[in-house]
Amino acid sequence: MTTTYNCTTDDQRAAGLEHAQRAISSKQVVVLPTDTVYGIAADAFSAQAVTLLLASKGRSRAMPPPVLIPRINALDGLATDVSDDARKLAGAFWPGGLTLILHAQPSLDWDLGETKGTVALRMPADDLALELLTLTGPLAVSSANRTGQAPAQTAAEARQQLAESVEVYLEGGFRPLEGTDAVASTIVDATGTVLRVVREGAITLDQLRYYVPAMLGLGEEAPVDEDEEVTTVPEVAVAAAAETPAVEVPAVAEAAPDAPAPSSEPGKAPSRPTEA
Image (cartoon, rainbow, N blue to C red; front, side, top):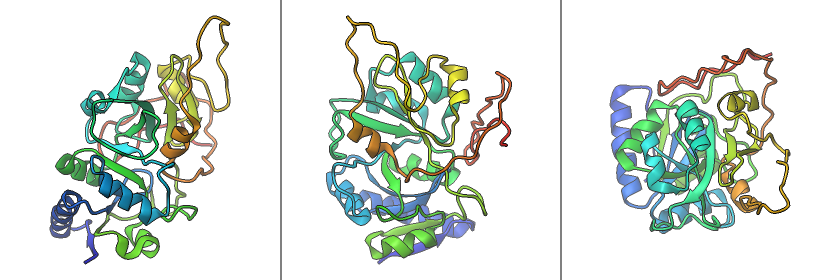
């Protein structure tokens, strides 16, 4: 039976997390808040659970979900050939609104869909999400909405779209903030020698370039040596990593080079340059 828990109260939060953990173990799907929007989550290592997640959204295997992790050191267990630049970004912006597309560990027994050997990883800056992830381990998570519809910013909005296909709804209040629009995570393709932004979002290009100056912006191409083999992530992997529809991101005013100062405190988004 589908149940909603008001996780703004301690007793409901504890009961909700316990039920959500059981649901994940039973290959069911749950809805939880993140620092961007609400997500629908399933055990990343259960093909049955991932199939249910995709079916709930009305999405095909050609759009595999990203994976949320509870801590940075889970990175090497799920991805391989992680570059120093990718590690710099993870250290700077996790937990937070940055998704990294990486080469998946080939030895892992999972089936997220047609990933073409890649995985999109993120560590959310939301204490409720991190608490559940600590209980369950990595979760396949996509935005809690039917494909093509607006992303849910409360569990109640998610339930209007996903209804009884979800076992547990964890209501944590409005995400990201009451009265604000949903802002997707920034997606960076970190599978090649030069990192590039493939979707703009919560983390600005200036912030990324503070840590990785050679970062390519959306649509930019690196100079190519005629003798150098160029490798780019398949477009299907880029599309799959987009856990929310593209949204307009507020313009950001120019800031001093030392402006980026991401917060590492769960539940808070990384600090950003002053918005215009």
